[in-house]
Length: 329
Ligand SMILES: NC(=O)C1=CN([C@@H]2O[C@H](COP(=O)(O)OP(=O)(O)OC[C@H]3O[C@@H](n4cnc5c(N)ncnc54)[C@H](O)[C@@H]3O)[C@@H](O)[C@H]2O)C=CC1
Ligand SMILES: O=C([O-])CC(=O)C(=O)O
Image (cartoon, rainbow, N blue to C red; front, side, top):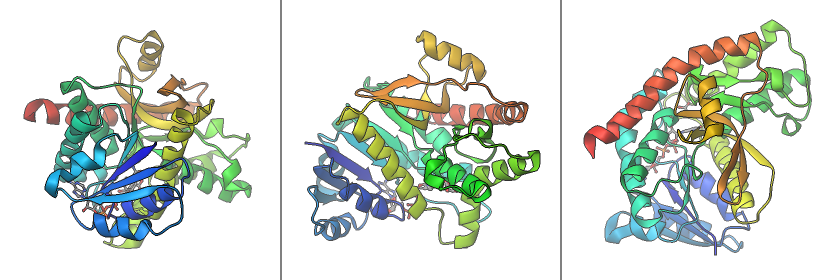
């Protein structure tokens, strides 16, 4: 029995993400929660002939509780998206409260679930979820993930346009966070190896860092990335299920995670990022969630500069998320 809950399931990301999860044969129950239209989305997806039973819940009649109870995995794409001219941080005002309330529901009704946070600003919403879980005494640092997979997907797509290789065969680790300068693609570690000119590196880096803006601008007021994000979210969810349900070893996905203060391995990683409590690294998944967090490895001088620019912005976003909970709960 593998229950997956999607919170914010009726939205631009929520619907295609729920569709892709309905097609995942590991899922036996797909539970869709939103403040609008979730029963409709559930009825529609429920006609697809794959094993997952689909249920839809609204806030009335303890909908969040029913959506979450016994969930193995919870994915959160709830919240407002950007319009042109906005930064992801501009979404904090609305999305911080939404994410806090959903995290409270998780703490109460699905305290053992793996949680994937898509809602922006990810750099702050992940600390918000963690602080709520800590307050309820149910925080497990191996189970909470900020989804930065779209940056990784963009990095392989954009790099393939230069190398003319199949984008699915290209892997570029992307570390840091999920907003502009905090997105740090490690093009020097591209696999299979590929050499770029400095000009190509700079252009590619900028395009990966601001790929979200490209979509926001093209959608011209109608929102931000939804379909590519749904694919990215489904890929990450599928990796989590492969590791935690099927027991597949060796799966590595970059993700924005919490670094434990009392873990010697994390202490070394933390030192490399000036003590930040959260950072997106190459994370190796295992049967209990995070099996191992990989270090940054050898990075170029250019990447060191990018990292130095990312750290102060990440620090502010992390503090903003933490203090939002500690001053309000
Ligand atoms: N991590 C990433 O790489 C990415 C993150 N995003 C973020 O994902 C979020 C969602 O984006 P879209 O799906 O395009 O927005 P959307 O507006 O199309 O959908 C959001 C959904 O959340 C629902 N919602 C609002 N408050 C809720 C609550 N309290 N409980 C449950 N559901 C609630 C809405 O009813 C709506 O159906 C945004 O914050 C966006 O910035 C978007 C793209 C990439
Ligand atoms: O740009 C946005 O606001 C949505 C997002 O996070 C992305 O597409 O990477």
